[in-house]
Image (tube, rainbow, N blue to C red; front, side, top):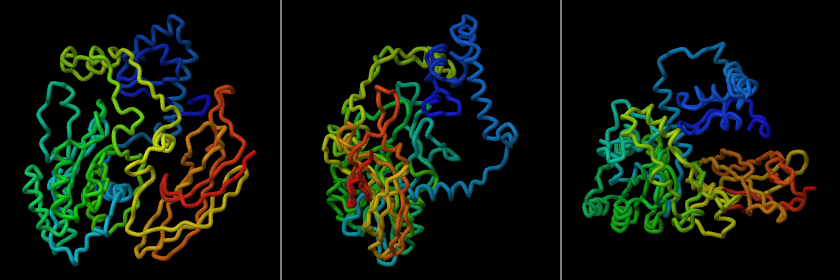
Length: 484
């Protein structure tokens, strides 16, 4: 980071991620978190014995102090103040509206039309109370606590810290507000037959399904639990206008995908997530979000379908720490022996894996639908110190929208790289029928590869194919260029 990338900030560890003093210091770690299990007395002894030089310590201190001055924290220290909560809510909602992704909209089941809609069945996912939030470091506790009581702690003592929580932003209430003339009712989904019966009587059924995720554990599968899958199947069979809203932190498999009319990936949408969802579902805001990760068809398509888990003896004992979080963190830092995980896909990371292995996917990287459609034309790639990729995007629908146009080149075969890589994109706002010329400047270093022999980055001479479109698998424009 400091030599190859010229990083001028300081490096600190993940909580409990430090496992040595001298080795970590030599490798460039400037600060341990939390506390000082290794960067305390152990580091002091390493300096006294000569294992770590005073110059190395001075470099750590210099980088930390430099960052404090560079960010203005020394001259303008943090001042306690009352947060502007309402502005925070508005920002959270705006972010959610830009990042929630429309995956399917068969027969234009959305947007929900307030003037013609008489009844909506909202089903499952505690959608009467709130939206799910990620856990661990990603968790934000709602004022007043979660409206959905968390399950009782299990045998794992960390259950007291890593537990599901819902933010007090009710999709049921938000949809009722946006659809004042319709009867919007809620069914828990615990009784599948009752949910199907309610869905059959409604104009539209919206099923909320979730997958709780946190730091501290991996999902054993991308499948949802059997219960929500069964619920979605039953509701879709009862009402062809079924919309599924997913609250997940990663991709989910969807055995019911071809049976529902609409699919929305809401992720963990935040404190105003319900209001954002209601605006999107009713069309007051158009969908613009694109997937930042591939949704595979099944676990079998993953590079590593089975988890690699550490040996049982490597898990620190919370009870032995006396129930004290600080002691537990100390045990985590000191008590985790190494175990091997081999990422043998090498360069084929993420969407590159599915491209290289020619695996069909459920939804590709960069994918996201809108209430309008876009057409691409006129690609021109100018070479030089910087590549300039120019093309036109036209809104061919009847609604205003924002398209995220993406640029992917394929490198020469001699580079030994996966089929293509994302090197740039542009966010284009368009009125109905409007066309805009878009220019995406690309630094040539985005086309380089790492050369192990020279221990550096190089541009491989040869033929490149630059492609442009709306997702990693929808690239209607392409132009070949030669780079020396």
